[in-house]
Length: 280
Image (cartoon, rainbow, N blue to C red; front, side, top):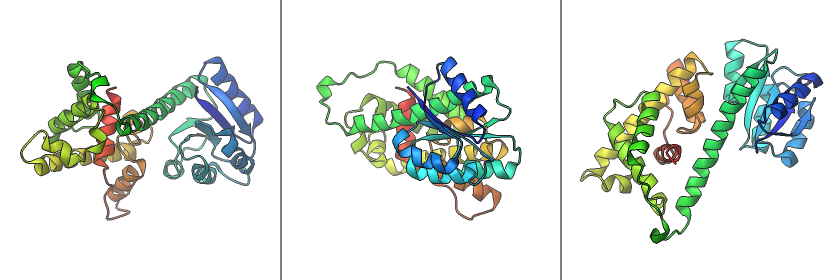
């Protein structure tokens, strides 16, 4: 069950959010506060999955709060409430670590839609961690069941690669091959490097790895462009913090803006593991 913590200097807003979440079965409320500083003291014991915080509050604004809160509960997801439409302020909020905005006045349909998106992203992150833990377990091959849904897995992968704009890249076929192998061999795949994996499919593993890296990087660039156009873009929201590290996507966005001369980086194994988790 997803747990929520609310911070807004208007008590009525917190009450409305509680009502929406309870009535629609979206999770449970583990706490709320009308003061950001007090909320920071509550977080270690509350340990919420999702924190919903107002942008404009006295004493400490929502952006400052999120920057501090992420150090206390780094695994939580953050949603921000706001009437502000300034692109610069919205960009600052995303850079601070929020995953979505809910516009005021609050609309129950929008609240439910946003929470479901963030909850799905949270579930995906947990699935990736769970999958990594499974890879690390000493599981006997005799107890493993090799899935026979190869076609379904490939279709799922093609859909994701199409959404991030890299299905036409030469490395997409290599990615599909590697990910299908990861899904089928969970017992020992985590101990293999990307180079080890590539060596199982061709005589020139370095070339295959380079193709995969170029293709995965192109996906990062595509997501960065989507984020620059619209932070709330569904594809950007779905994949910028699952297939990739959001900090690196943001770094690539800064490169595109001309704010830095360094590109964002892709953690290839994380990218491949995340794709595999989507196919579970």
